Length: 347
Ligand code: SF4
Image (cartoon, rainbow, N blue to C red; front, side, top):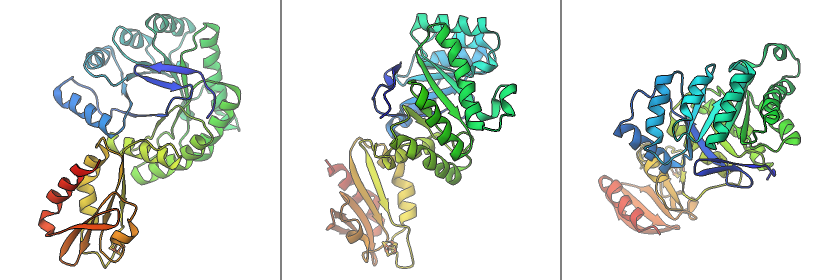
């Protein structure tokens, strides 16, 4: 693992050898803080989300986010562009981190005013550089990765001049090779914790594939303190994708791992529907186990013999098995109820 400095983001520590954290971003305008919002954040946390970011486009949004931050334990990040006064206002609340693209904050004194208040409040800042919004003089550079890193370094120079070191850096592009290159290049020169992700990665399948292709090698090289899988899909999908990416990189967290068959002409049990019904509940369980969902007995218990708990079609019956051994044979209409009972018994 890259030896970076550590930065405290509320209850989460980024870098310094601490576990790679997972984050996502709230997808709608946060109009109000109500029980539904609180409950959804609770569900995201159960799925494995560690940090949650919100766009804060105006002072009203800063007030709303401030109210939310006082009500939830999860570290919340305020994402601000253009108007440093919004960031200043956010710092009046228990916001865990500010994300800015300093290049669009404007005059240096504004950035310094922000750094002064952030330092006083002990709040770190993420410098987030996006390939799509580079300073004008860097846009035409043929070496795009070097240009992105230089954009980050220019901003870092302002922070370093000011003696502000509580910084996380992200440099995002929408393609895999540039994402790999910028992060490797930056990590050779600096010890700031990196926030990894492919930006504007696309809809679910394309986005997951691109993020996996970029993030798994970087994580395996020890780079990355926190990840966000940007998808044109739900926050829940982003969190689950991040979990799987960590697992692929050898950084699996405790939790349920699902093995499910793709289904074929032999299936007598609808693995797709069952998995869709159960996935979120399984991933939210505070247990570590492998659960198999198989379509038939031809390959079911055998293929999933390492699963702690499994369910499979068996002719006109459904079979529940534990580590390859059949423990119950039931009517399909009872599948959910019996599966829930057996799940309860998992240690
Ligand atoms: S477990 Fe059975 S239904 Fe599923 S893919 Fe294998 S053979 Fe087909």
